[in-house]
Structure formats: C-alpha cells, structure tokens
Length: 452
Image (tube, rainbow, N blue to C red; front, side, top):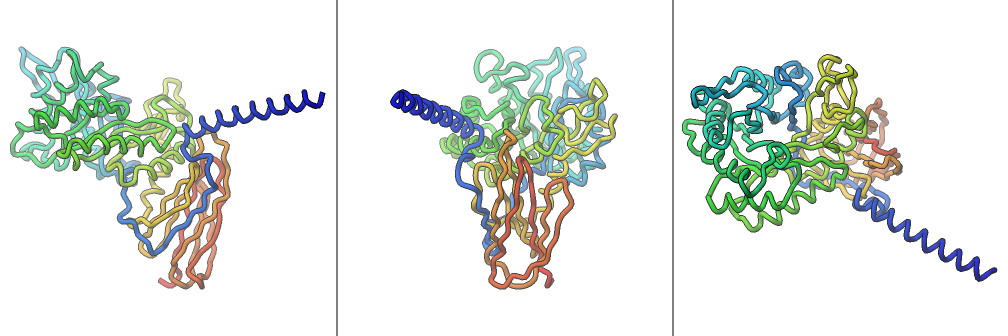
C-alpha cells in the first residue's frame, strides 16, 4: 500500500508539473517574461537616454458616420494636442467623386469639413486613400489619387504642408486585395505613386502603405520588392496592430528592421502603426481603466521603434440601444450621450505631461513596465501593472539614484484617484520608496525640488 501511495504521489506530482509547465507556456505566450523576477525599478536622475519619443500623439477616426464625424469633438480633442489625425473612407463616405459621361468629377465639400475639424484641433491630416464607390476601378485610381493630393497639398489649392497619404485601409480585409493575381495591391500602390509623382507646385507630403490588418512579412516583402525594382516612392511603412500583448509592437518592428536590411533605399522610411488597440471588436475594456493600462504598457514598447502610432478611435458611433458605453473603441462616447470622456482619454493627458528628456529606467518585468523622464527639474516615473488576466498584484520597489541634495515634494498619483504628497529630504543622493500595484493599475511618482 505504501508503494502504491508513493507511485500515486509521483504521478500526481508529474501531472502537476506538466499542467504547471503548460500554464507557464500559455502565460509566456500572452505576456513574455511575466513569470520572471519581481520588478525592482531603478531610475538614474542624471542619466539621459535622449529625447522622449511621443508616438501616442496621433489619433484615428473610423467610419462611424458619413457627415460631420469630427466637428463636435474639436473642443474635447484639442487638449490632447494631437500631431496627426487619420481619416479613412474619404471617397465612399463624402460623395467626393462622381463619373459623368466617363469623366471624373470631384466635390470636396463634405470631406473639407472633416479636414477643417482636424486642423482646428491643432493636428495635421493623415488621409487613408479609401474606398472606391461602386462604378470606379483601377483605371480611375491614378487620377483620383493625383486630384486628392493636389487638392490638399497643392499650393494653389488648400496649401497644406506635410500631409500623409496612405494607399488604402486594410487592403487584405476591405476590397479583397492580394499581392498577386487580378486584384493586386501592388498595382494599386504603383498607380498611386505615379499619380503622386505627376503633381507639381505642391507642398511637401508623404506617401506610403500598405496599412494591412497586421505586420505581414509577405505583404511587406512584395511591396518593398516593387519599390526597389521600379524606384517608386515609399515615405512610410504602415500596418495595424490589435492585440493584448504590448510586446507585439517590438516584435513587429524587429521583423521590419530585419527585412529592411535587404533594401537600403528604405532605411529612412518612417514606421507607422496607423491603427492600434487591444481588440478589433467591441470590448468593454475600451470603457474601463484596462484600456488605459494597455496604452501605457504599449507606448513603453514603441519607444525608438515606431515613429507614429494612431490610437483608434476618437469617438464612438451611436449605439443602436442608446447606451453611452457599449465597448466601442472611442476615447469619447457619441455626442448623443454627451461626448463623455473615457479612461483612455485621461491616460493620453497623463502621457502628454511627460517631460521631453527620457531617463534611464531599469528593473521592469513581464507585468510591470515603466517610463522615466525629466520635466525641467522634476523627476517623473510612470508605472503600470499590465495583466490581461486581471490577477497579478505586486509591490514594486522604486529607487531614484544620483539626485541633487535637498528637499523634495513627492507626489504619488494612482490613475483615476487624487494624488498624495509628502516632503522628503535627500541627504545621500538616493530616494527609496515602493508602490503596490493591483492588476491593470497605473501610477506616477514625481519628485519636485523645493529649492527652485
């Protein structure tokens, strides 16, 4: 009986190990490094790692409505200080193009209204050249692209500078484009590039793509081959990223870098995620602090990899049931429910408050990610405990080294709560503290010298 119990015990132990290893592999796939060491955040107050990139200052709006989508959001979006705002559906939503007796006719009135709203926020337009209405095809495409760029970038037209033009939106999903065969995205891009090159007397603008639903190597390689072989312009490389794992951003750009190594002409092309979020479908997390935590964790992964990332989207469509919160992607609810602000909006305000000088921060793990910056004389530390499983809680030590001696006000603020302050005196150049972070909780700690 003893031997039997021993064997049973061994079987249970082995079975438990197999289950544990399986769960561990699943956790690792979801959040690499999550099962590693506890975080131990160390910031060196005198060690800059260069200017702090700001990829999050770009926003996108999808096709929620066909008239005046952005006009009523200007007052709410302006405080976010967006750099660019992306708009798609520019041909099929705004009655932009018509064909009469075989001739193309353009009416920019409705689209101009959306562009004016973008400009009123302080941003510049990033136009996704999509989609063609019924009755239009590739034989019209070159002329359509040329007319669009000329209208907005032409010095005798709208005279806008530095507009981005992206060739289509998610061509692998919308329009059933491929990279071979009869409906070939490469033909679509070639015609757009030729049309762009025919424009004269225009301000500087940028052309790029392919804006696929993910970073697909076969699409990128096919496009790069076309650009290289035919000497076409490709000012930026764009794709979309929806997913729970922030490390996907670094994985995407690592693969892009590996591929671009074979195309020296493309080394300087911008890398742009022209839509991003954690779920391409409606998800209640878009209305909660989880969405805010995903932003902070993701932005940390974008640094020095992605030049622009367009958070999707600015405002919700109108819920058929009239609810303000229905898991839609917006930073704001629909105007019919008051353009209510969601947590993701407030996280962007938090990020905007970061100083311009990034400081060296170490000691992160698979759950705890951090950003440190210097804003004038203030030291800022942003931390997030990002866990899609909503289970991990951790007390995180914080050590700030090489501080000038003197008195400081320390402000600790948990996202969505009132800040707490205390006065401390630094006598040996080091500040030591800790914060307890619940799942998907974010905090920022600021040290402000009192002797300014």
